[in-house]
Image (cartoon, rainbow, N blue to C red):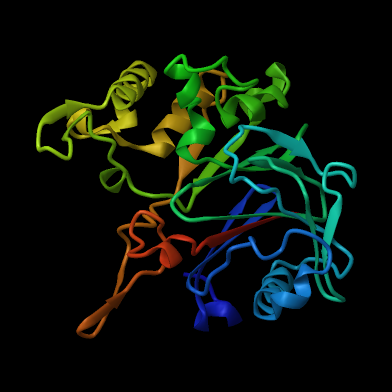
Length: 297
């Protein structure tokens, strides 16, 4: 865990990936950005704004820098440029300026500015390349796999995976100079999608959607599934790695965080350093989010 004045309200970790400074903020504070959608919303979330301003200060952001914060809840596999037109809303005060107003999984982070994504269990991808700069993207299961298209329910979306959207922005001749880092996601052992189960009458049933998902992942790479294939325990970092490999990008690494399973022992008690939607015991807990802040220095 990193040294931060925010350690008293959150687990904090930091990484340096090329020109990208990556800072993670976890439990117990709720970092959900849902209250901050349009200009003026900052008035109703003073605690969140205070802690975001402190995080920006610790990331060495200049007073007039922006934090570009796409809304990834649509899982649409889109990566957008950081422009005023793309992000029409500015939520902020004298200390912090957050650009909002776009549904996308990822953003190209301009030099001297930051990108920010709040999630719980879905990992974040950080990509650095001298020609392209820094890209950050939310990488939930449905951002990486167009499950509806796999099941032939509708036509495929423009990019099957957010990885494809990222790779499209990197010229093929410099893809070998790309570094990919994956952070703050759920462990495969806690991310099962069983093929078999029972219905309300206790009869055995087969989940055909998960059969399709299993078969895609087996074809993508043997490490994408953990343990029994019929449990369909998805290793999201291995999925991301395999998808990048298909684009000729091979320098892919990740941290050891398991947002569901990690816990810290404190005497006779324990606490979870990261929020997890899957581990949440009620609808309120399931809405709590961790924060990934990426600064392009």
